[in-house]
Image (cartoon, rainbow, N blue to C red; front, side):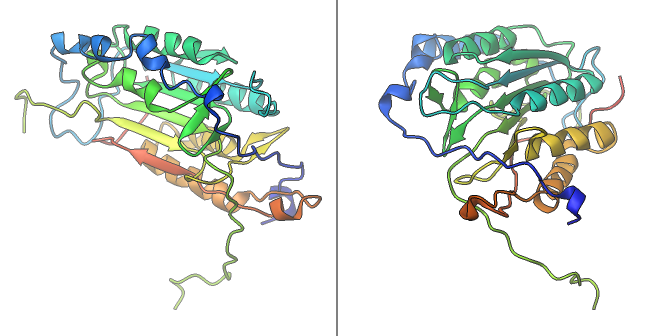
Length: 302
């Protein structure tokens, strides 16, 4: 790694937070009609097939790309959560990147969980017949299994469940992409030094059912249990890398290929620089992708 590639500003890791009950919103979903009553409303509709049954790629030739929601959390009401300095850089860069990919971008700042759900539900209930896909990004603090809104912690399924095929039929068979920039724990990855020498030197149109949870992709900035690093001036490692790959190659390669190269950038180009905190110094990070995609996703030219 060259000197110019190193992180020169002190990285600010997100601390592991006390998971006390006062900060959890475990019953909010039912209170907002997110239970059985609303969960079945989509069953009244038959979803249209957006592409041939065995097509290798998603149909990205609808009139519009679709909505991209960015939930940017900088300040919190929870006392132990520090302000996320640098997140606005991430938000601005990602918004510009997604606009370049023809998304209709909507940015929300420091919302409480009920407000986040309200905006997500509003989009999920829209008619997406002319849209290719939908994208949701959450920039926030987190810990294993939880993310934080301004006022409390929550599980991600509270958000993505609005877009299952039975609840949002006009997005059935279409990609639902989530980008999550947040810690997933307090473990550190010191990395392993590698030598320069590499190992290689020596049918048809018939109707069909799909799972309600198909066609989702969730890209996390780090693996479960570990820190996610953020530069206070340049933004998080993951978002820097994601924006670079999407801008340079977003209309050429499929998304899983792009995310492989995002992981490569994060893994090889970044290292924490906190000499005043030895245990945090020279640490590494690797993103993690959970995919239920059934085809290749390529953001082709509109």
